[in-house]
Image (cartoon, rainbow, N blue to C red; front, side, top):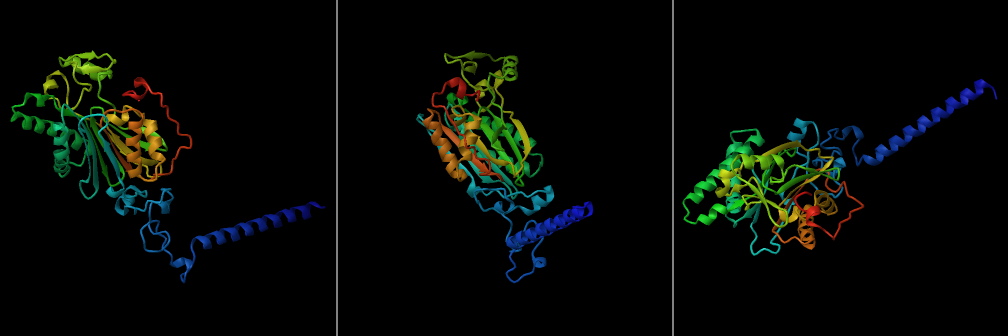
Length: 370
């Protein structure tokens, strides 16, 4: 066979391949966009109305959600940030709170629409009675809302709110003759979600917030305990001291297992403060599955990856919150346990096929170091 003929055959073959590829592409396009009386040119070319139906695009339309939770895309924020941002409906947020082996449930939690574009989530774990947790439950949201009207920086809003709520609680207790109420305090972990993409978290104490990103936990809070070198040093400089009980747990002045809280006014002059640590993060709807807020009845018995894995296996956030609450009990939690699960764009996308849990737990492996 001559070289000229060989080259001709190769060119002919390449042309046939290109033609076949073109036919295949046109067939696929027709199958994706059936006419139903309209030509393809009449179909909407907007990414927010991809099929020309006039209905808003949903999370699953963008291939973000796997579990078919039907929520529209928030158009103004999506245009502003240049990425599809799914709406988070409060009706899809899961929550659960169990009493454990305690006589009273001193945990409180809040889920609400703070403003047109800001959602509010919070967990409070009371100690020394429910008074401080109840106070935060009733008034924290109002203080945040008042400050949001004047300040756009949500980290600053939360920092100011925690301090103002702490002062308001002190004024409230000033009119009480019961000195034991000075021992009442609470953790506070609060999350604000603005425009479905800006997440800001503030926390005092040992309640936690974690974000599940690509199936892995991203911790948004750090416990305020005397184990932390910086916190222990601050307590000592303020005139307080740290002691350890028989289980090896450190306490401020032999009483409190945390170095920051709202309330606990008998320890304020020893360094226990209400100033929160804050964190701001931008969500990635295609990678971020959910936000979980938990009190220590959950997070001292289940580590962050376990929480992430258990929730990821669930069909919806409400089922997930209930399962996490029950799982903590099965693992031996005796404390009050509260969890809030807020679904994001990648809900159901990152499911682990190898979820393993150890039932032979030790305090050191599943406690506050998890």
